[in-house]
Length: 342
Length: 224
Image (cartoon, rainbow over all chains, first blue to last red; front, side, top):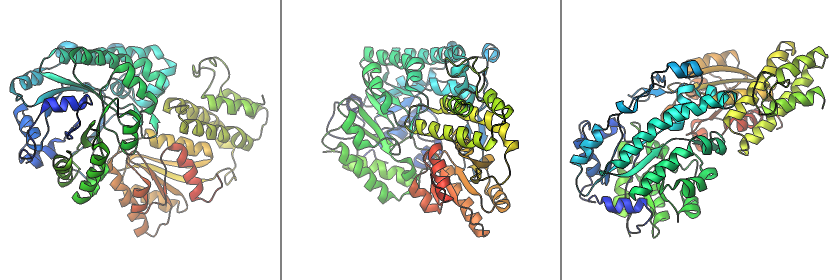
């Protein structure tokens, strides 16, 4: 597709995530829906080999791999007339753990059952010019999803010990993933994703996040630092209230996805651009509804922000769901590959 | 502190009742439930409970939320505290009272099961003096239509979390207008913008639950 425009250069991508390059803009994406991959590749992308071929053909320098895990958070499914795929949703009232009894009887996933086979296979198949991002997250999200958001909110104050125990359970499990991934030589970037904010501000108080979630992120930051590999953090929403924690205390090197409805890329670049590589930013809503020409113009605006400064990996402001127009997604990538250099 | 001031204080603090552990330091003290009961026993006018305690308290809560001084959990406690008081006085409020600002039909559109935001909007609107008909989540357009037919002067509030589901808001508005209904519509949700609201013919847009109150008042021509 775009292999003629750019050969992978994982080392350059890594250095960009460290905010140390200033010549061209690499691509990044947290998730690309299987239907989108199929539409572009002409066949389903299922295996690691397919994944490498797909990402390489579009101009990416990496593949992103997660350990295999399934946690029952009792999600519901909604049928949607607008798209082929049904969506699953977490309960915002009920949960699978709402008191100590359900905490004790819940069938918790064990560390030993986590599946790293895809990461191992990726290590064998990844070409020298590409690299592997080890990604997982959702300590905070899994806790509230398992409890239901309203229960979670009430129990934060009514039974803080139960909330603490939940974070220890989920945090311990997910930390074990990051410890294992950090030990894998083939993993050359760590990416933790966990939404903690809305477009108007944090979902819960900064103090709660600092006390319950950030200790785990700090440990992931240390793992990345020890390996001297980048550490990307993903959260939707406005993060200014915890930005100093993320940068100075936790030590993230890169921030994703910079939703335009929440944080303005140019403003963020001015405020923290010397300390962080920014990732994403191209409005998913526009990718769904605009024309390819409008997407090219929008992408050019972002390129102009990064031009001469670097420190930006181009991508959507969240991920590429199946309802993004494929022609818009491709227009964004092509514009970056052709014009995002100086 | 008068009983009305105490009720207002407890709603702002989110102290539901004496059994509630929130907020720290108020455990065991009477909350909105006990204080409202006390007010009724003391023959305090129920309209005063609503107008001088519950409604102004939720206005303060909304302002604190907008300033990021409190967050969703704390707002939920305040909303539940307000509700504990409202449930006690509701049966005693006269139908057609000037304090009932109007009716709002609220729902999350079809395909979307998200409702934290929608519920907060309901609680804040109720706290401001609106009557709410909550259609719930995953609401098909014909359900909005049927509700609007019964309440042609009610406002319609719609919520969506995703770009793909917010498209269904337009279907609701088109169906209302095709059936000759002129209920004013206001919308919100993570991907929704004022531009989108304008594009689909919604009369209003709210970025958060507190702004939903301002917007509902604006649409009904009520001074903020």
